[in-house]
Every structure is written in structure tokens, then in C-alpha cells.
Length: 107
Image (cartoon, rainbow, N blue to C red; front, top):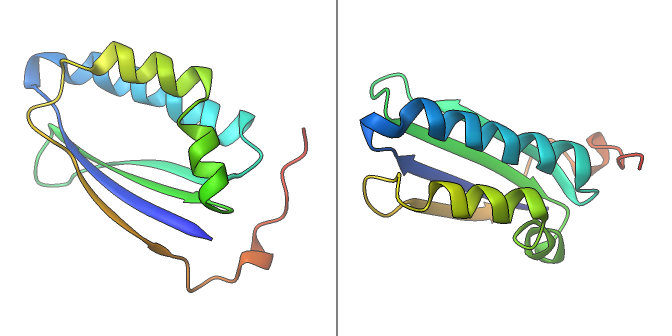
């Protein structure tokens, strides 16, 4: 299972709009993408203008499909000028819990 953790700093004046936009992407990822196991949006405890995305996909192909999904493309276009610098990304593979703990989605 492929995992990425993305950290994004948001321009303060766009925070509320950014959070609404990322909620749409997260909802679409979780509800409409069979290969997306999790898409969590975490608010940073120390910086109100920073968020962390925890994303887990069955494989690289599922992540590639995510990046082509309508909700992702809409989000990317909507927020393109709202970040306060480049995001950071950590990638890896899920060690625990085992992949069997995540049943396939029904669609």
C-alpha cells in the first residue's frame, strides 16, 4: 500500500476557502475512488495556516488515478494561488495495520 503525507502552508487570507476546497477533494477521494484507502486532512496544532494530508492508496496506479479525478483537478485549480510556498511530501509504504484491515470499497 502506497502512502504519502503532504504538508501545505496556506496564505492566511485564503484559509477558510482552502479548507472548504480540500474538504471536497478529501470527500471525493474517500467516496469515489476505489483505490483510495484513506484521505485524511489534519489541522496543525501549532500553526492554523498549515494542514497535513495523510493519503493511502492501494498502489501507485490508484494514486495516479487520484491525480486525474475530477474532484482533484477542481481542487488543484481552485487553490493554485492560495498556498504560502511549496508543499512538502513524504512517501512510503504502509507497515501496520496490514492491508487486509482495509476492505475493498463498494461502488
